[in-house]
Length: 176
Image (cartoon, rainbow, N blue to C red; front, side, top):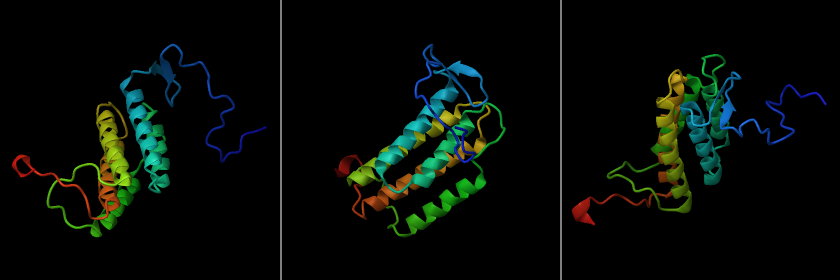
């Protein structure tokens, strides 16, 4: 049966055996070791995406955008990039909107609180790692790291909101 043009991919078999020797294919068809920095960055973004699914915070649009970001990372050239400035602008608007409903910060926030907040804080930490991995790449879409930077800020604000104003705050050494 022919593939529907609206289907981005059709997998009839999950395993291909193509990576059994420790290599994988990039978006341009080239083969690289699975330990290549580009593949590591793609894996960190994939892990982040999984964390967002586990956070169950209604972030499906962002999960789709992370697939776009992964597609950008899979290409060693700059052709067909998907992450563009409007993605970053939308995250900034969401950060501002969510942050308006929160009390101003008076201390650093400890990652934790409610289960929902803890999951979002964990996703934020994974997002920061993904950002560092992307920054280590030569020739990656420059907006990919900016997008991840804003996303980590959004996850921080959403985690604060998930704590409902009762967030654990850092108490410096002598104040514990």
